[in-house]
Length: 94
Image (cartoon, rainbow, N blue to C red):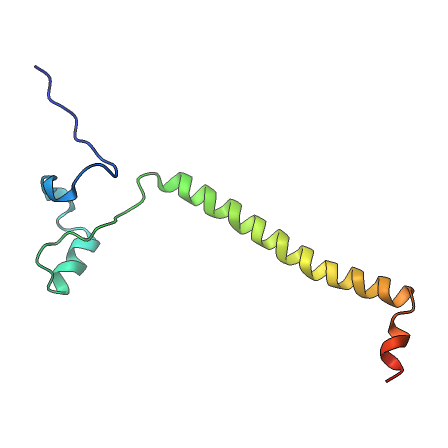
C-alpha cells in the first residue's frame, strides 16, 4: 500500500494539515507568536514559485514604465501638433 502524498490547494482544509516543525521558527511563525496568536500559523505564506513571481513582477514593471513614457511623450507630441496647427493662438487670445 502506498502512502498518499499530502494535498495542497483550495480544496484542502488547512486545519487538518499536520504542523511543520521546520517552519516553526520561520519569521512568520515568530511574528504570530509575538502578537499572542493562539497558533504560530498565519494563513498565506511564501510564494511556492518565487522565481516565476519575480519574472512576472519585472514584466509588469516594464509594461508600467512603457505606459508612463508613452503618456508623457504623447503629451509632448500633441502639444507640438497643436502648436503647428495654430491652436495655441486660441489660447493666447484670452
